[in-house]
Length: 137
Image (cartoon, rainbow, N blue to C red; front, side, top):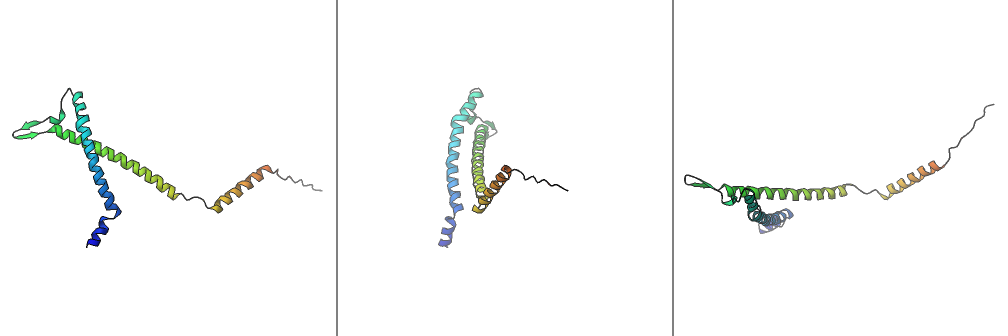
């Protein structure tokens, strides 16, 4: 059972997924800091000095913190947009690699035949046509 788990854990996809989760988590922290420390204060200035993060209202005993919700939505939008662009770049790079693999280079024989054809075309163009005159008596 330990051997099976080792094979499963060391498969390429599982390791790639683990690395992706770790990098994604770190990236999420960076974006959260960007939104809370830079974008939200700037948005507050645009809105007349209002700090959206601390905005809330109370209904009975419940406190609704819509400012924190707005910040979380902005976090999500930035993270999803960033991941979208990264995936798009990766897909384009993969497509270019696949196109290179799919277009086989011509064989040596094909290259030689092409050269022979081109030489023959050039010779036919330079030769003057043979005009035969036929006299009937």
